[in-house]
Image (cartoon, rainbow, N blue to C red; front, side, top):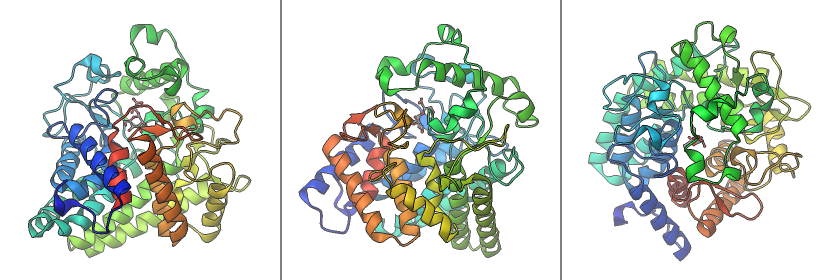
Length: 446
Ligand code: 2M8
């Protein structure tokens, strides 16, 4: 660890140990011009991982934080979409499924990549860019200067991303972005999609044509099921058949959902863009971003709140119905500062109840199908808890935010930088040496 990069507050032995191990995970997972989430399971660049990772790199290597964000946005599509995976030409098709040949997307932009996927992920990058910028001065004048130049490069690209999501992707016409594949949420097999996915054909014969690579490098009990994967593959084939166009998509694609977490991040991105526009001397634009954040917040409240459960739920755009499942995504709108007080109170009640608790699991602990092992159907994820901690801070709940921070730090220190954690024992699950867990640990320690 470079002395300049250490946090300013004195560190205990435990935090120094965690800091060093986190920094070394990020060192191991750096692939030259981008970070991989995990060497074995996810050997390419993932979109929202890049944002979480930048938040941590801001402390130990801001130049890499900017490089990683640039690498991602160099693969941005002409319509503004930022792909959920940018494929590394150094890897083989067999190293990840579905790989570049399956998606069949050409390389856009200047990135010498091997194409990308055609779907998106939550647009957390403006929030991340703002966080890296805020910390740049601590690394000296040259770093501050670099940060301003990077913001200038990123700003129009971040705006194009927002325009795509609030324009072409407003499939429901109510001011929110729809996801058209569960992978777009980042919460792949969350019970939030079960109801909407029931309408998607699960053609298991597809899996005899295409082999799941994840099962070769992870436990089957920790991963989505074959039925889930048959639907995931079928949805890619359906979107790909129309060249990933969103025009008339509702009529020809079986899955379109408004996710509370995705849209909360969309709103938070507008607020970060307002800050960035301010730094770049674009005052008028800053006002527009703040107004857009307010519209998104109002639309989340109007369309995704369930008064009976007192929290937010995913909405199936095709049927207009809210899913019954209570998932961590339904708490994430807490990130939005303009969330009305009674909605804040509802989310906090749910978070403090026996259904969730600290650290917050990905799904209602009391649900009959709560699964302590299976990915986004029960385990604790550091990135989701990090978003919720931000929400607690936004609403001035410092003590609770501190409790959540301490719980996350303990979990990672005791169990390692795993992808996710058993919600009862804390055991590390999924991939070890996972980049966003390490990156966010740095932020939680700083
Ligand atoms: C997981 O998703 C990928 C597909 O995108 C997979 O299961 O293969 C999710 O946890 C997602 O949120 C994350 O971005 C990705 C890479 O860490 O892995």
